[in-house]
Length: 292
Length: 284
Image (cartoon, rainbow over all chains, first blue to last red; front, side, top):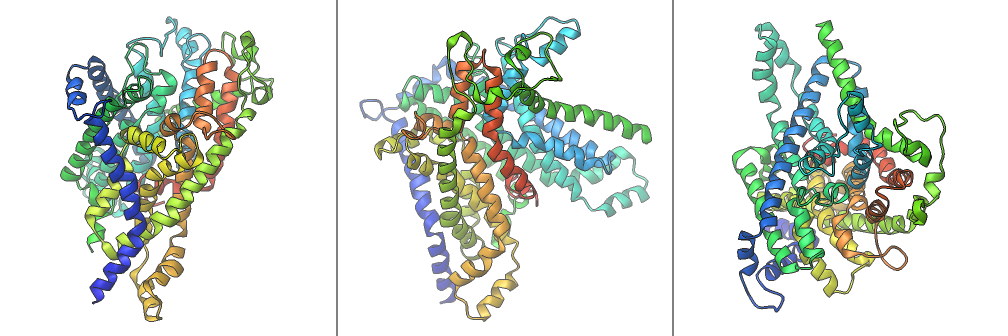
């Protein structure tokens, strides 16, 4: 009886989220599949998916997304990790000042970040090109250049997200028990050995969570592209989310956009699945505690 | 050892400048005159300031556009949409659901589902939400945006509150049960009050993400208050598209001005920010 009563209470409390789940997840999902597998006349078709195979812009967008993803995550991870490590290991009282400063970008909205970088990257009056000219080099048209637009986006994205990686790694470092370091110094480990055998294993959880959440954040990206380059020049900064938006709401091909959304969902799903399957990320996020 | 510390301090100072400079540059651009902005070499430390960028429309070539102060209708939309979506998702959906998942249903699969839902990009549901909102005739209205925003505020708040409910010692609830409280009374009178820091975190972080949301607002609204429901990011993006090469002072001023509410909230909620931003991975 007790178990039944507990289940009933649980279900009543969960009722709103069950309704939510049906309205905001299942129903849109059905609508999504319905539009992806039909054409404008309403007939069922696979054309939206077969068209992807010959879609040159989709191919470019996927390549750009991969470049954007790996570039951003590599930049953000190395900067975030490096800064957290240096700050934690070499500084004492100054730590909190630097930490507050590195926190700042997290407070700025993505559209405003786009606006900031528009001002910074301007060729004629921007401060970055001014410094480049001081070094005697020719000014650079960052956002208008086919091969520089994407790296510029990655830099702006790195500014936005590296503090986020920093935050997680730094918190991880703070949680490493001091006794471990004391034991390491008693055993006469070198700095590198301490890093390799004490620090790294102890912050494994933070490293994996930082990677997961940072990756998802980068894959979600749309705002910076929309504000900074609007996909251009040419197709050089089309990423998947932006291309889908253009197909759906500039060309009004909602059926094809729906098919692209399914492709996007599969990519995100596969990524999250791999992370859950092959790392202990669930445990680190506290999911396993539900079983207790 | 000492030398290494000095090197690290220099290095971190350079890094800090990289983080501060874009914000600083936007601030000084907002208080420069047009002449000070469009000059070479650029002025890094202006000595004369103006506030005219906040209320004067940029009208080089006679094209009068928006001003920072003119963003008020968009701000009204953003505020109302963000407040209702945030309150409804936290109190009506997330809090009871999180409590149920942690104390009663305890399903790892449901936990995974909530986690996955927080990770789905807006672009995935862009088309279906557009079709649904058109179908129920709520295009360009507060309610259309509110309903769609609940799709991301609810799972996020649920996930966040699950962590906070988990931290409550079971003995507190057991004591309340012995005192004769029903499960609902325990939830409402005891547990919910113990997770108030979590609720504040969920409210503030969700408010900020609604305030900053661009993609859904872009496809679901087309005019500002009072006729429509366009939010602040749309004010900014359309301003940027028109004035990209001209009224930089006005643009910078608009960026700064529309950011104030979220900055103030962010500073107020600083101690919760870490835990919320990292999905509970970092205890704030």
